[in-house]
Image 1: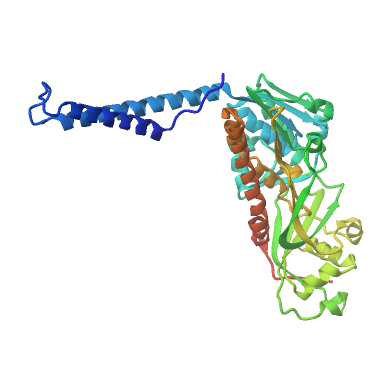
Image 2: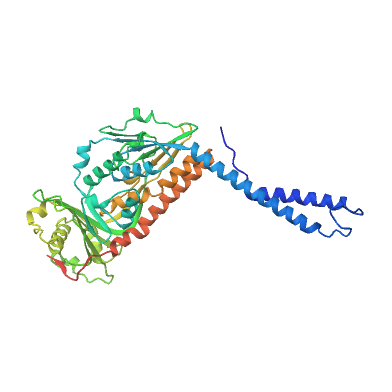
Length: 454
């Protein structure tokens, strides 16, 4: 049964006021030259009675409209349910499942993950949840007091394997009758062919299987990405110490790092008219250590030389000396042998954001909606240690989207709900370029005036 939209309040009031005004004119014309038993000869008392009747009619119309509109909304909520399919059980996919499990608009949740639970738990690299992400996860029922990790101010640090295992446990404890999690099951075209909705129940597929995932292509979305500059240059390094424990560690940030590279040649000794500020970030567990070097997009001589240099030793030396100066208390110095085995950028490159051109799709014939989230939707060309927070920003609007889609009764309402999702995604991408990188440059834990020399 298809429900027709309820008429607006303005239409109700305008219609009834015109009817009332017409009946008043008829009564007035009929009483001209005659006396009425309800009125004195001069018509005294007519206006108060007519005004009272108009007021009562208006009140009745308003009440009828409110009752009809409320009944209509309740019926739509009762009627609308969604089947939610999630591909990928990383932090973004599991958080999307938590959102769906809390939504009254969800009828069924199905998750597909290529890796087994043991493989998920074995993921060792560290993630950082900022204050906004922590608040968002708390609303979904995440108890950080029972989660292994460490705090620094409002930021929480933990290993991604521990975080995924905890979210899986939370989902399983909710014991929803229509939830099924298929670990060790790769999403294939055969599975995709079985997913479809109906005229009474939409199906929503959330592709969150990472940058190298194939689910978006299987579902028919374009693999085209748009590349946008972030107005900053950066370099990245990573090394592993297999004898160290996988202990979550807060970030170390150094603002306005001074570099003395005069020993590498005369081109580095040219005085700079334009001053450039370098910012270092040291993050990761004691076993897997990462460093990022950022600077504003300027044309100073030092920045220009680091962008065009063909000598990989220069940045390797910068990262080695920076680590030895700002490592955590109790951490061993980086030896020359470790520096040689360190994965490191050979020169400064421009930091860019790649976001999927087609991240939202509606397949009308199948009553199917496809959303792409997390690294599969957007990613930076260098790791800066906050990527999981970008993915969580992208799914903050999923709760409202589920409600809007469950109450949609036609194609226009579905497209209207998806338009809001597209706008949210566009704002997020713009915010990353405009403010996120800038904020990363300005945040600092340790300010230093010491120089990195060779």
